[in-house]
Image (tube, rainbow, N blue to C red; front, side):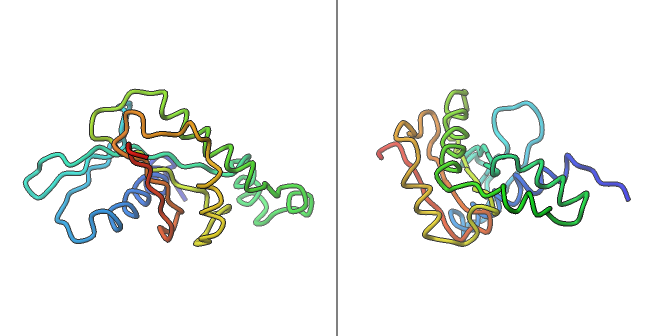
Length: 169
């Protein structure tokens, strides 16, 4: 079996998140989405039916701490050890710090005008749980403002919960 990690990563971490955004913000519009892979400072371009630019999209996923180690153990052993289950219980407060850092790191970079930042929260931390989602959003670093983004949209992986931070907030 050959697994192409890069295309799979783009599909899971970018295409799926952009799709969830499209479902909510462009529900009944005829648009095209072009995913970009490379060193440019955005992950997708959204255009209207006349191929006019609507916006650029930058995607950032915020996994729980040590996510890569947990996934490796799951892949290697088919499950988690008792030790992992007992010790790997991140709090929502520690997760809020990771989300805040992820957003603040993106705010330090320069993006083209008309760029939306999509922030996808970890399915392991928040899956269609409105209370946990609202808690994370309410505890974000108060320094988080859109900066040079048109808006920041925070969403859970299945797209059940969204929060938008616009320049006027």
